[in-house]
Amino acid sequence: MATNMKRKKKAEVMEDDGSMTLTGHLKELRNRLIICAVVFVVGVVVSLAYADRLIDLLTAMGRDYYQFLEDQDDMPKE
Image (tube, rainbow, N blue to C red; front, side, top):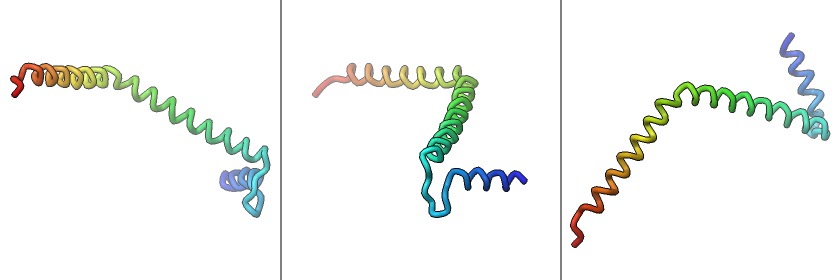
C-alpha cells in the first residue's frame, strides 16, 4: 500500500512524458531540502559526539606541524 502512495505522489509531480509543472518542481525541491536538512542535523550530532577527540586530533596535528617548522628554522643554512 505504501508503494501505491509513492507512485501516486510521483505521478502528481511528473507527467508521463517526463515534464514537470512549477508546483512539481517546488515539491521536488522541498523534498530534497528536507533530506539535506536531516542529513545535516545527523552530521552535526555525530560531530558533536566526537568533538573532544576531533579537537585533540587537530591540535596535536597543529602542534606537530609547528614543531616541524621550528626544527627547520634551527637547521644551519648552506
